[in-house]
Length: 242
Image 1 (cartoon, one colour):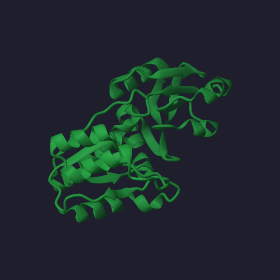
Image 2: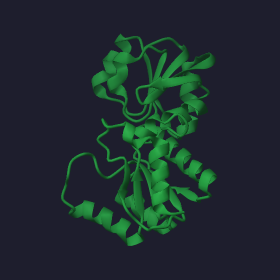
Image 3: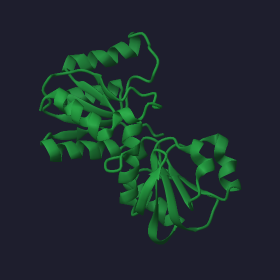
């Protein structure tokens, strides 16, 4: 498939121009080979990921966290090494940050919410709100999240033991605590500054890992491209433990 055709499709499908507040340079960040034969999917852009992409024969790499975040920087040191690997393999780098959090079909939050068993999903900021068909023990939700992400989630039980309504914001969502009205808030990365607020608000929070809650979108997007265009893909896993 032609690279530029794929980029046009992704730009439209992910609505990347609808997120002007996003500091990420959403879209094609580095131009590689004109033809795409194999897609890679990864959470982060980094030297280790790029080496994996080279070894796997990837020529179009989808990432959630790209290289560029609104400020220019000199192409020296590790920045130079990163770009040299992409140029060496002719690998295109395509980043989708908030567009991939918020997407109703392949977004991090929508995919994880459906896997968790939530129904009646509706948008919440770049995340989603939903409910379980029946009230569910908090510990059971945490266990299910652990199965889905592969890590042991951190549970702060400030509310009731049985939960029905859930807000889910992958990655780093603690700045939204003041707007949460559901029984449970699921996000990725804990922050010390909001520890007491969680309990004082009577809110249940499960922290399921920044990295681990954001593997879902790139995988779903790559799978979507395979189904639509027949492009084979590989997930390039490099957990951060955060």
